[in-house]
Image 1 (cartoon, rainbow, N blue to C red):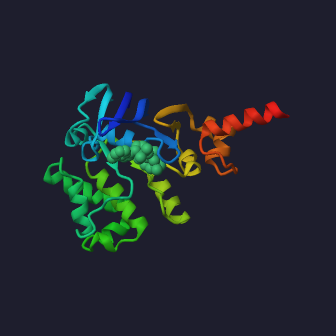
Image 2 (image 1 turned 30 degrees about the vertical axis):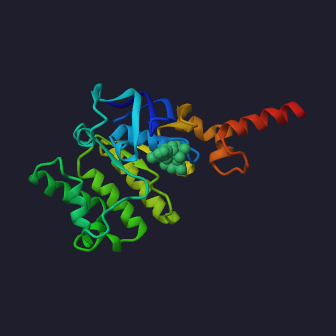
Length: 261
Ligand SMILES: Nc1ncnc2c1ncn2[C@@H]1O[C@H](COP(=O)(O)OP(=O)(O)OP(=O)(O)O)[C@@H](O)[C@H]1O
Ligand SMILES: [Mg+2]
């Protein structure tokens, strides 16, 4: 049971090639981290997987995506949701003028009415704060609560796989910890997780496997444990201090240092 991306290429406005043949696999029982510097192409890859490129004048020009060995039509966002893949977009994107519960109901548009009630119960159990504030305007929630709402909304579709784009962005450390625990709960309840994060330490602390993306390509593909132990990853992503702009630069400087010494 796997969500698989096969050799995907993404082009914006017919000319800008930003994802240059990327392949990744997310098992149903796993958390997979996708790391990479700003502009590497992580968000574009997620958009390519969920039919959201259209609105950004982007297109998949090569490759395909399959869910549990069935190819899916990634040009149609509703079909992707029906196939069991939900995405939580970068920057949360909740409807601030709608109530908390209205936001959650929007996430369940592929479900029957009975299913919706059950799913609401489940989400309120997972995020009690959302239950308490179900009638309030979503815009009044704190940043962390809005992130929980965005995740809750994606869960309303009962996804087999969930894609999270930087869920820890801009949140206080305790809130990040809470989100991290929730991601583990989601995985343990049978939903595979693809976790895009700038916060590599957080992502690798719970991930089973990880990919590093640079300039539109996957440049590392290893177990989370191996990535945590990798010296270059530590230096570039885990804040061991470097002024290099990319993983490749870290390697380059090190080679030069070895050569000079
Ligand atoms: N709608 C668009 N039109 C043209 N270029 C775009 C568009 N969206 C993104 N890009 C470009 O594609 C490249 C990859 O961007 P993307 O947002 O996928 O990177 P990212 O890895 O998610 O970065 P970040 O960590 O900053 O979120 C960047 O050079 C970006 O400027
Ligand atoms: Mg991004």
